Image 1 (cartoon, rainbow, N blue to C red):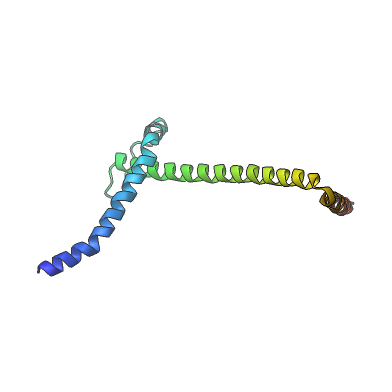
Image 2 (tube, rainbow, N blue to C red; image 1 turned 180 degrees about the vertical axis):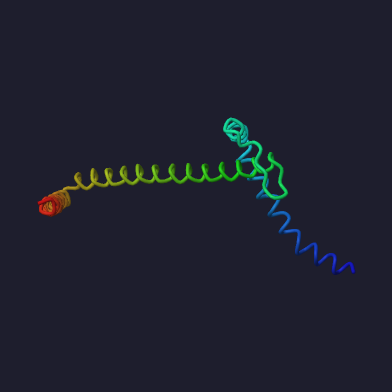
Length: 129
């Protein structure tokens, strides 16, 4: 009987620890914004929501956590996209600056840039007509 109990504990302990850590992180991420979300629901008259066996405050708490996580996710994605865009533009600008400074390469690079700009400009104008 002890062996079975120990085996059950070994199987359940990682699951319980994982759930506890996820709930802890969820609480850390959503707690600062819960007051804003609760005020939003109360101001819009949605504080009496009920769902199955959950009370109104529990439903508001769960919906608030989900909305906060979605908004945080979207914020992080937008921040990453903007950072990547500005970072890539600065890398391209810097590499362009360096290539224009190298003696033999600057002539070839400038010429190829001019050719590419001419080809793409004429194609764009021909598509407009």
